[in-house]
Amino acid sequence: MSKVAVIGSNSFSGADFVDLLLEDAQNDVIGISRSAEKSALFLPYKRHRNPRYKFHHLNLNDDNTRIIEVLDTFKPEYIVNFAAQSEVAPSWEHPEHWFQTNVVALSQLANHLRKVGYLRRYVHISSPEVYGTCVGTVTESAPFNPSTPYAASKAAADMFLSTLFKNFQFPVVFIRATNVYGAHQQLWKIIPRSVINMKSGRKIMLHGGGKAVKSYIHIRDVSEGEKLAMLQGTPGSIYHLSPDQGESVRDVVKLIADLVDCDFNDAVEDVEERPGQDAAYVIDSTVAREELLWAPKKAFTDGLKEVVNWVNSNWDEIARQPMEYVHKS
Image (cartoon, rainbow, N blue to C red):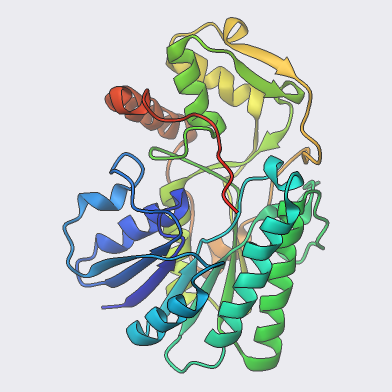
């Protein structure tokens, strides 16, 4: 049995990780998130009726003292932190909000955790966006070159946590996964949004014509890698979780159009590129594959079919949901 605290447990990635942990009924898990628990549409872990899971509705920015009290009482062996301001484009509007959450609040929490005696591993969910545009084979030793306030805040957080490891042997491991997708994702993300818009007859805006190359990886493949890093990762190490190749956003939307029998040209509209959009996210995951014996299992077309089926099966509820990102500081 493992005692695990998941911070950011109601995020897309956090909720899937909780769901994976609760598949083992012996795990003792707490979730901490600034958002209240939503329906099972977005929280797959709700399928479990596990008395070993307890949720705490707390915000890193406002409730750090209370979060520390909860953690010190629970004494988790492992903490996996998904909590972050994570949307890229809106970070240009209020960059200070991204730095407050992703750097200031995080540093307050981590500086306390370095002094506790119960923690075996702290898994920090970083981002390949810290590298900027990924050209060629990007390994874990690539230099930081962020292109947006979001990416800069994540890079700053990583550097701070690295200083805790270097000076105090803080047991941090870093995860940098490429573009996650799957059922239960936020509806404004490109894959669910494309399915919903095609089903509704609304246009899909392709920024920069959809030329940017992303490396889409199924959420459960990422959660499996995060669990391996949590249990077996070497403190101070960075683990990339990525598929074997990237796909342009345009090609992904074409695949979705084929799956839902929609005319691609009628479904999309090319619009201006976003500021700071990196041309490609293609990173090398050899370290995770060799050290953790991790590898992605879900074929991309199978994952897309899963999203289509999720939208179709939950259409009445999805149709009532807001489709736009709403920023909360």
